[in-house]
Amino acid sequence: MSNNVGYIRVSSIEQNTDRQLSDVFLDKVFIEKMSAGTIDRPQLILMLDYLRDGDILHVHSIDRLARNTNDLNHLIIKLNEQGVTVYFHKENLIFKQDQHHSAMNKLMFQMLASFAEFERAMIKERQKEGILKAKQKGVYKGRSRKVNYNLLHIEMSKDGASFRKVAKSFGVSIATVQRAMKLINSA
Image (cartoon, rainbow, N blue to C red; front, side, top):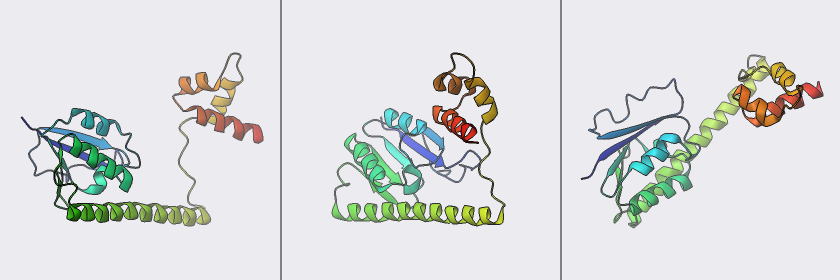
């Protein structure tokens, strides 16, 4: 028995997923609230493990599955080899195991994936420009720190402290502790 499986993704927790696949009957839905900059996304990994031969994966649009042409290509080929059909609703494209290799499907897929990747690059470029302008005006201060660097420094000065132990106790990465130490020691 095949399942209709939905993959819904938005880039941040604040964004709403309601508009994606709202009119499609789905047996199972995987909802991701994070950037598609990587394919190491928890719900994507769970979905890939869940899908079986004969299932249909429904995705609102190509850029919801991946922003990188290589990642997108890899995912589609992998899914098709497993016997999973992938349906992108916005683009009205369907990729089945026996059809993925047709010349027209390949061309359409590559063009649309390239546009999605280009669009992402343009968004990042505009974001960079906006941050630079805001910094020049003195408006942008950057993202607030997750942890107080002085507290990290105090903890690091204790006997037996290590970057790993301090990072774990504060719930931050080792790189964050190292950055804090470097910043405080250079001041």
